[in-house]
Image (cartoon, rainbow, N blue to C red; front, side):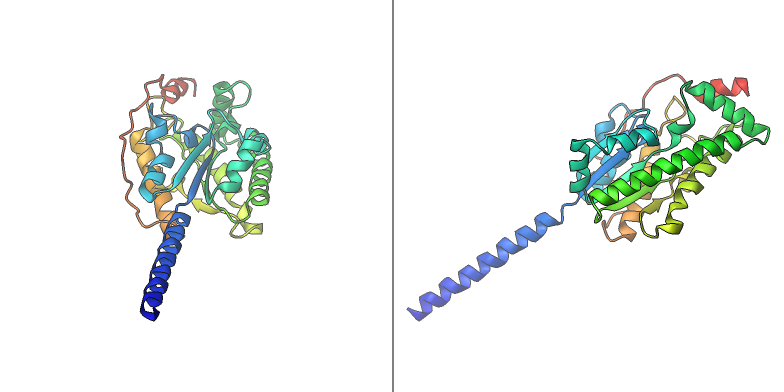
Length: 268
């Protein structure tokens, strides 16, 4: 009788350890959320649901994945988005949140005409109009980070710096304008240390050619892989992933669109 009882107790212990092991394994599957604009969404590749950098990161590290990037989104748009119940739910459930935002703030109501104006002014040494936009974007960015922290103080937030397309005539001006924005948004950490972790996409893509789609703005398949690699490096440093080389389950199919910046250079 005692021998049978011992066997039963041993089996119960084995089953308990097995159940606990499965529970711990399930907890290790992290929820990864993308917020922001068309770069976050993956515009630039036709099969963005399968091949954008966020999906690549999720596939590589085995995360649960959700993408709420929206084409044309500005920092003001993202502030409003974070008031929606379904977005609040996704933020609350996320373990890791990647944010790519800010580039569209420069476009204004006249879209590329406003950007042409900013580039021309920068070419003549006048960065004040760009600085005003940057200040407004920063105010919104503070609200964005604050809202995310309020909804989910435990989430790891990754902020991706913006890259500037490399073009002979307007590249230098774009670089100056984008650098203003990146430096200002990252300066949030001066008063709020560890509020988020910077993924320096700007530095990773500076001087690199052939990473944009034919629209010459959004990252193509190559660009998404390069961005994914930078995100993976940071996640490994944070102890949230092991791999730094992207796993490509679905190769990206590059979008075909009118090349914007080469045409805009005709006006500069």
